[in-house]
Image (cartoon, rainbow, N blue to C red; front, side, top):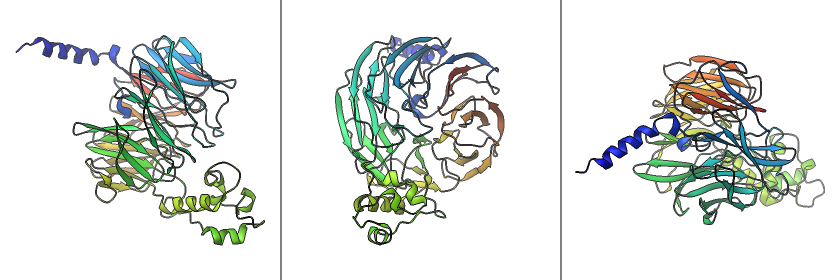
Length: 471
């Protein structure tokens, strides 16, 4: 037996564990699991454990890190940019403008630069709903660009692209003509496309579920979560049990797929029920023209979702649009649930291992570590469950850091790091049988992006800066 290949493999394995080869290639890092490396500090702040601080243009995208460089997207003065910063100093290395004709609409606290860039090491891929996908080398040279139709949703784009198996994969769910597309990572040529027009708006990032020597592409969407063949885009399985709008990104742990979603009207004790169109129109269609305007809806939760009912955004709700929303409210399920591998077709009744329907996060994605899955509900309510069976370790415990949570948790050194929109970065112990808050760090700035953790350094974007926190 020739020992050289074996020795070479050991050398490569050892090198890949060193800081030089530690990377954070997409939203929530390697595999989208949110697991970092090293031993980050507990205490962080504008003047505490700051290795460097860089002023960056606004944007909600999280840092994408490869080798000694950081990729970021931003919007400033009505223009979109892809940025590259030095990982060790925060110095801006290059900035490329995006040739968008106009900016897509976004939520009042949203941003046209929300999707996180991804990389395979050779190229950096940035997606903007206002334009499409652009590929650069790490020196800033544009390799290719692919204009794509923006999702039809007034809140703007939220789903980030991923790169896997030589393909850049993007989910663009919208109120009209949603789709998923895979592009050749080297050329930008379309490899396959999936029609997702049956889904409405969605903001979660696709996830690659690796199990039993296989890879499945998982997409959480309105009412359904689905698995697809990574090479062809063909559907493998589907499961009911989702909210009307999907925000959180799935993860996997201990042989299970973990999916979370919550939205208004999906809780058993707070369901939204809509009358049949004929009954509602008889009482509210003031001009009797067979369609409904915003002014014709009585005040309430249904009127608050007028823009979601109005799929084509023409200012009027038809019978078809009304009944579609009525059906979504009726079928919506808010829950965190686990799916067993190996299913085909509709697996709702056969492969769901466990479900939890209380204290659910809205946007923040779950994180799994050491046989447990952690979530953070808006208002600062932390929960932890046994990954294998969903048994609560603790549930709805207050962390004394109120406000909304648009950032998703990441972990390193046996600890969880998660930031509130108000800018409180929490550090939680990932072990023990009760909530243990190790630190509350006031960053004194709004946070929408998720942290990246590499070699004990926390890279975190606030509304005006990108920080590198380390001991």
